[in-house]
Length: 172
Image (cartoon, rainbow, N blue to C red; front, side, top):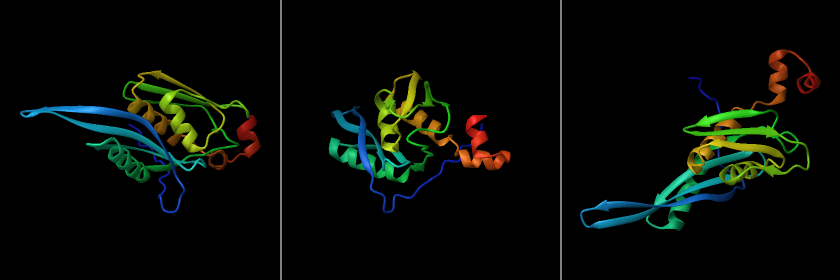
């Protein structure tokens, strides 16, 4: 299995905006009755190519969201954004969730649903076509989207590796 080398980023002095993707009420049955707690899936990003996701669990919703934000700040990655879109098509799979993201022309907007939309908007991608295939579980869809974004490569890196010009990378 190939190991992904994501471009990790430190939260340092970035201005991050957070979006709550999903909140789940979790019940644990014990001898004394049921214990309720909450889990929150949160996406943070600076809307300029840096994005992260995290999961927080706590007895109260607000505390779970706060823990999720802290976890997301630890898992930030840098993605290539080229004129508001991504450089190339990418397909990724996580569990039963499969996602397909494609670059789009300027003015198209973010054509994506639910949890994929939150990740793509937090990353600062303004024009993209995305489709979630398979499972609609928000946790796996977010992870698959991150996997796809992490596999994206900068056009300049591809040009250097192939010893060709940037014009030839885009025009063939």
